[in-house]
Length: 464
Image (cartoon, rainbow, N blue to C red; front, side, top):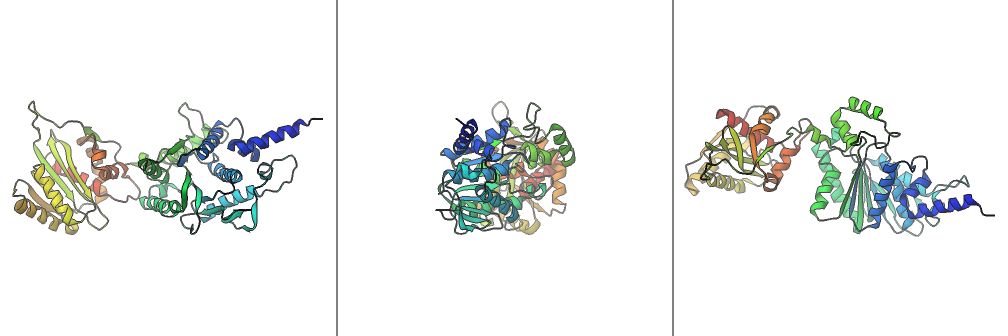
């Protein structure tokens, strides 16, 4: 007599062994249901990535939709497929990394209490935790050595080599998302600690809510694309473009609207729509550009004057920012930007040469913290080395509050400062500083907005 239930159960086990989503469904059928299409898409994307020659997969998904759970399931499935894999996971702190590790370890070691229930050992009978080597955050499989390590930015990864890195939600709050120093520390931990442990040919998965354009996901997308690595990016919004929810049972439209009202639009957009919070909170929402400079019929510039403003580096980690622009009909057309951390012996001749080449009429230099000496050297280089007295170099003490100045002049900057269309390529560091500066929160640097504000203030003095 053929037992159909036995046949069905055997088919489920075989499917779970072959296909990651069906493994999730076998382990947690109430959550990984066949009508939850987004989970099928996520599972298939992770499996396809694992079986491809791609280098990194970045998954952005709303909270409570199962991204951490699926990541722990994936670690279990990978170790079942290949007992030689070495998986290293990184989470926000030691508590979360331990929780993640426990989910993976306990999933593999689940005891069978119900004959009709499928457990891990039914699917991968030869994959077992090594006896006596089941520590919470570092453990091995039978026949293996150090197959799994869970860590965090405050933990350690010394002596562990990984074939698969899984990073799970590093940012805890909007406060961290707005803190450039925290984001930089995350990146340094990832590059200095985690990447140093990745073995040749290893793969990386970053799973997180998309908080900020400079968060780990954003930095990784930019970095690995520049390195010509094969990058995959799967982004899921809670509220779809057609007005439906990604999964109404997990998050209904009513609950979503309530959360938006409670959190505020910027935080909710980051949490649920994968729109970085700093895009909502950026001081400068847009910039004007030009393809050609104002010129007469003969091609001669129509500028009524060419001016320059310089914010010299106040401290060792600050940038010098010197902006040169032409004035036409009370609009400022940026011609050149020097934005650098190089020392004064480099920047002084560079700024002087730019003033000379572009025939600047007047240069204003902030004299705070060494700016006066810088200005005097610029004037000396122009007169003695370049034989030019065209540029009137003046310096002044800036006593107004920097943040207040930047914020109050932002609208004028967006409406009246024009950049060349390729300014992102010409001055990438300056471009990044201007397009990422936050209205609120802790910015790593404010030298670019400060000097650009100086452009606006100079234009007011000119009657612009």
